[in-house]
Length: 365
Image (cartoon, rainbow, N blue to C red; front, top):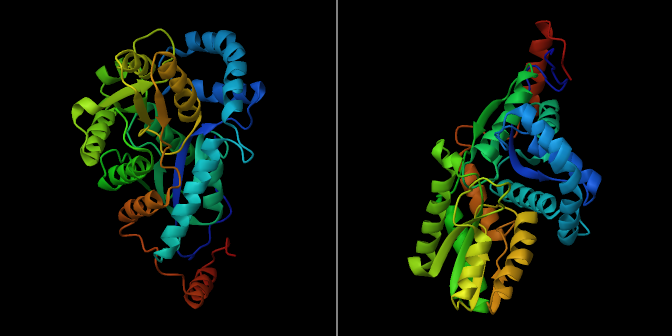
C-alpha cells in the first residue's frame, strides 16, 4: 500500500498539539442493519475474539450477526435519546468539557474524540488532525483499566494508520488510570453526592465489564486493575470489605469468564435479605448500553424479582464538572515538555516560510 501524506503539512509551520480521546464505539442507529455493521467490525477484531479466524468467521457471519443484530438493536432502542447514542453524546460532552477546561488553563491545543469501532473512526480523525498540521498527539483510550481487548486494540488502530502515513506524529499514550488519585476521588465525589441525597445502601456493587478467564492466565492485568480500583474506591468511601462487591458483567458464550458474575451476585444478595443495593460501573468512563440497559434495567429486574427492595444505579462520571477538571489535570501532566501555552508568532512564521521558500520548498500555504 503506498504511503499517504495529507496536504496539510507546511514547511516551517509551528508544531500543533492534540489530545485524542478514544472510546469503544456505537452503532449509527438502533436498527438491525446498523448493528450488523457495528457488531461485524467489533467482533471481527482478533483482540476481542481470540478464536482462529476461519472458524470464527463462519460462526460470526453464519450465526451471531443474523441473530444478534436485531436483538441488540432492540436493546439500543431502549437507551437511545433524541441526541443519539448515549456513549457517543457522552463522549462528545466529555471532550467539550475537557477542551474548555484546558483552554481556561491557557493551553492552545485541540481535544478530539474518536471511536474504535463505528464513527467517527480513529483513522478519519487522525487524517483530519494531520490535515491541520498537528504533529504531537496525546492518545487517551477512555478505559480506566488496561485490557488488551480495549486499550491495546486502540493502539492497533493507531498503528494501522501510521503504517499508511508518511509523516507520523509524535505520540504519547495514557495507558490506564485505574489507580490515579484524581480518578478515584472523582468517583468517590459522585457517589458521596448521591448518598448525601438518597442515603447509603446496604451493599455497593462495583460492576466491571467481563473478560474470558483465560485472559488473566495469559497475563492481561485487567482483572487485577479492576480489583485495585474497587479497593481504592472502597477505602476512599470508608467502606469495609463486607459492604461492597466487585463483580463482572456482559458474559458472552459458554466459556468461563472473570468471576463473580454481576447478575447472579445481585440475585444472591436479594435472596440473602439485602434490601438495597447501589451499583456503579467504574470500568466505564461514559454511560452506554452496558450500564444503562444491562445494569440499570436488567440488573434492577434481577435484584427486585429475587426479593430485593430498592435498586439504584449511579451514573458513570460522564462529563461531570468535578471529573472534567480532575481529568484535565491528569492530561496536563502528560503534556509536560510540549509547549502548548504559547500561540505561534505570525511574523516569525511568515519569516520561516520565506526562508523555506527560498530554499526551494514547494508545499507552502
